[in-house]
Amino acid sequence: METNFFRKAAESRGIIVFLFVELVALFVFVLFPDYPTIIYSTSALFGLYLVYKLPSDLIFGRKFFLGVVFLLPLFIFPILTASPEYERVQSLRTLFEVLNQGGNPYIGEKIFHEVGGEVVFGNFNNLPLTIPFYWITHFLTAHWGIEYLILTNLLVRLLVCFVFMKTTPKLSQIQRLPFYLVFLFWGGEYPITTTFLIVALLMYFFTSGISSLRRISTIGFLPLLFGLGLLTKFFVIPIFFAFYYYLFFHLGKKRETGIHLLLIGSIALLMLVPFGLGNVIDSTILFNLNLGQRAVYATFYPNVFSGLLKWIGLESVYGVLAAGGFLFSVGFFDGDYFKKMIYVCFSFMILMPTPEPQFLPILFYIVVVSKYSESYERVTHSFLSDR
Image 1 (cartoon, rainbow, N blue to C red):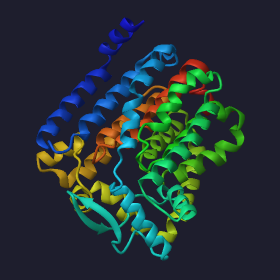
Image 2: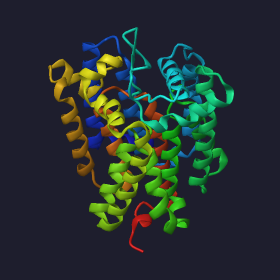
Image 3: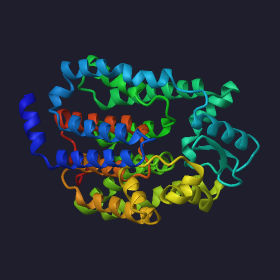
Image 4: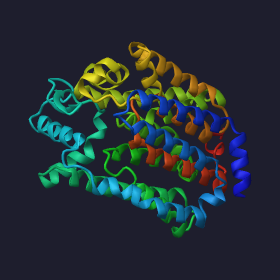
């Protein structure tokens, strides 16, 4: 079985693309040797691609279980060694101070940032719904620090594990155990709780949950989840584009797509109005697409695409080229919805301005649920089909 897997993987164009990405990442690392994150991120993406190509019975079998147990210390070590001076902890602390004073974190340049070891103050550069779980912890405890961030992450990830259990009813708890461990600990030092939970809920409705709540979720829950999810970390963006491209072009559900987009836009607008729509867009989306502005308030960790553009002096057009490349990937990849979504997520990770290892456990979650659906549910098309 393993021999056939590696033979098929070697024949795949995907493995050639990832080998090329690895070579480019190594080249970019040579250009910017102070930032090895690119090697970790691209290597992990390559690993997730290979996991996606594994047979489902191997992923949910004993060998994969043992592999996860072997890697578990690598997931736990960053949590145990997370610095109390972690930049995001300090950023959230100043964010809470601004919010407690009734201020707007997207104006006034009062949020802590660290650039090349130097402290600078700017606007909050994450979307509003990255805040709630951490603010609740701060409100209930009247304290804040790295231990509170990690504790919040673990508690919310327990909910993610519960959603995973509901999403994979045909797996035994022993089969789920290695995935519980990964979902709990991998990237547990990053503030991505809301994004992870919303992606888990989306995957639930994309598989088993949608069959029993079809009428309600098709009109209500999916637009609500996307509307909220797009106001968390940016990783919901590729899932959103892949889903509605598939709904509109592959299934021809133009009316449903229009209704969903109207609802999603309304939800997002209502959530952003208190902070000022223009202020949020300028401090988050436009901030990340402008490498020059981004470098003022955030350390530039070059990614594959952005690093190459910076090397050849074209960083000023990064935003246009990255957005164009991402939209091209949405239309380029074919096949069932899960396959399109996973490949678009890979493309998104490569095209982002900086490597984002915080999103790797979420992408792993998507890959695992996709393999479960492929093996146990066979519902990739049915939940979207005409009824």
